[in-house]
Image (cartoon, rainbow, N blue to C red; front, side):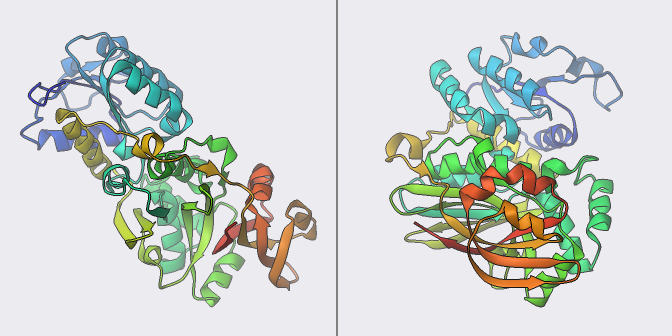
Length: 401
């Protein structure tokens, strides 16, 4: 596609983000009327001409006039079929489906190469923050040390209400659901899956490694208790749900998603409500901080629009870290320091502490703080997540081997 060629868009999905994209495109003179078809599941009044909508994916995928597909649906399996078919037919694609991309990253890279097309997905990680493009272009060297951040706006909104407004977790969750920040089943957000898939994508663009999400620790905030909140406050911390990928010695990296005690002097301490914040650390430039709305129709729609505009200029990800630098290996046996709050001592059988720096036994709640191998937590992550009598948070300390 040349930069002079008019982009003709087939849009899948017209929910919050789809409508947000339509709004921002309507305000862009260069792309006004660029959307020629919108594929949705059901007929209903949407305030737009009926002839703009279709109900069969093939109406877009088989249309030779449509050269760009924008996929903004929730179902990751359907999204996979749409994106795979579109790329195979020689159409460029923009997607916001982080689960689909993270679970099929290797295949998506191969499809782009095979069919000489581009798949862009800036909106899949951190909404309006251009973190993927920054990692691809600005941090396209071998000096990157870590990427750490609040990657999920829903869980951050809940924790903000808990720590800044003294609300109960259940009360804050209900408020997030009422405002549309959290789904009726909030587990995708509050149990760290959303952050996990975003972290997988960021890891690829940071260090050039494709990692299976099933092999990474993700543990969220759904088991947090008033005891944990009081403990954090007494120590001068807030609890944030944080994703991190870090470079270790000997071309190794480690990554995980965990609640974390965050001190006032950290950049992400002040990231509140539905906002995201990402700290990029490098060997020569120390720390860079990126901040912005991580959710919402217009912020996410603007990230999609940025990708569409990039396609007009023939942009594609080069996956420079994977292609031009010596490969990194995912290392699971490093140790991180965790806070484990438990209500019954049998829980301690699940976790093999290598060392303990602090312990407390109370009539109802007890806790231990010490170093545990990441591999131990990965192996037990389902048991830990489903056990409502415990809560785990990272202290931020690690033993880098």
